[in-house]
Image 1 (cartoon, rainbow, N blue to C red):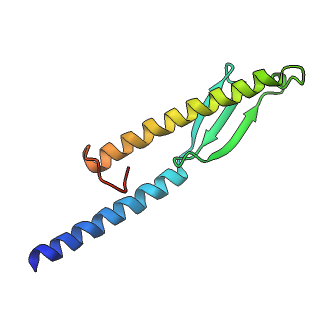
Image 2 (image 1 turned 135 degrees about the vertical axis):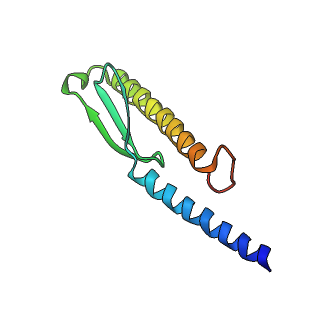
Length: 103
């Protein structure tokens, strides 16, 4: 029975760690930009888009395709940064182990 109690304690610790990580991800704010900062996208750690900022001079009704490309580029950069940050946090919390449900 001692092993069962230790397993339950370990499972509780893992659950608390996962809850803490989920909260940190929700509070995280990561920016990606393109066009020399003309377009900025802000994501949280769950990759939810929170904000898109456009400098007025990048909004040209004659060249919508360029604006679309800049938004896509800024979004890709932000997603890449989120993935890097989440991987770093996970490695720190788990000591590099890949634990199902936490990655």
